[in-house]
Length: 133
Image (cartoon, rainbow, N blue to C red; front, side, top):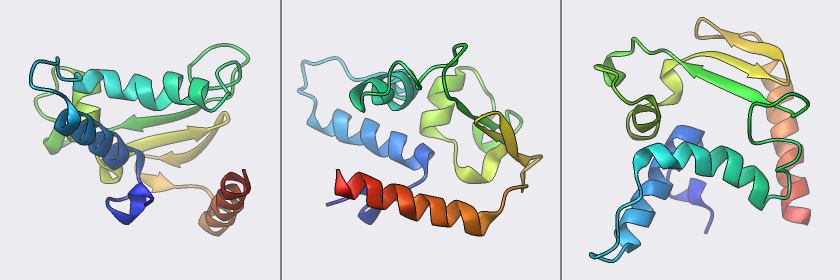
């Protein structure tokens, strides 16, 4: 079963879901996975697992990068003490202020600037590519 059949497909929910599944399966004597480690799993380790570690997954010169900037003044994140923990445990798409995709700003001040129809078509193409293997 695909996880989006169980929970929302946005990255924030997927990270929270992964953390919950890990914690449910962890033995009582095992140290729980810290929430702050999950963004690294979703970026650096995810890219490496997909065979893209040399091209994506971290902010480095020459690598492809998409950047999501949540509002740090959002009520659901206050008081913000540990940003990585807050992103995993409390963030959601509604608090995203800015998004850059391959260096192009596609969302600014909470408003989409991109062609949403084209984005949906590209997502469908990507899905077909993933399914095809």
